[in-house]
Image (cartoon, rainbow, N blue to C red; front, side):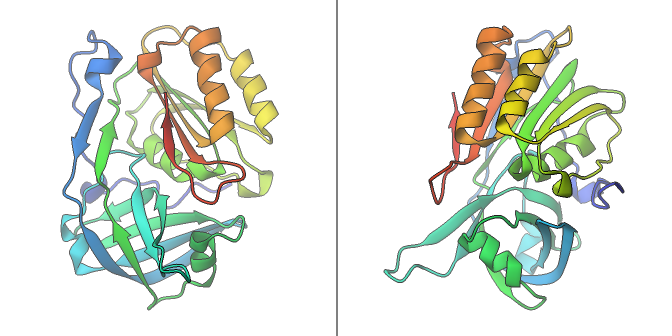
Length: 265
């Protein structure tokens, strides 16, 4: 696998993650930042298939001059045509990359199912338009922990790739990713990456059970299907004894639900 060509940080996408001294507990070092909420009407300038089931769409617009995304797992609202009854149709997606100077925003779409976002991305072509709102805020996790643990499924890949780009050289990071073989990718990162792929929720949970957490203060980040990520969080906190304040677990989707996004506590 060739490294993702977007995994080279640019000046416009590199933000300071200066943190309080590492002796402070994780809960006090993480920062929550609010941004001015703004809608932007953007135009497609490029469409690329990253893997058989992942499509990368590049959007542009003058309104991106002040776009802010301060954390690797921020999410923006993609706003589509209303339902037949007039109900708004919106979906949450991670900004894979943005460049204020070039007025560009890159979003990656998992081409699974027949939801409005996947359907839009499947037919997207240069010249098409899309309304994007946010991000409303950022949850900024410092990069200077002794180690980082990244766990997720294919929906977490854009955030994982972005995080790996920004971690400092030599930082220890373990990534456990539940992704079909056809959609696995190489990552470019200056960090010391221990990458482990699995092919099912059961295998992911087994990998977490078998994991020996490194010594020192670490931070765990998890994102994917709701039930799977809730189980991962329980394993880390209850079985592994990981500090519950040093973990961020999110449900990016839920089996049986058409639109689901929540933070798991």
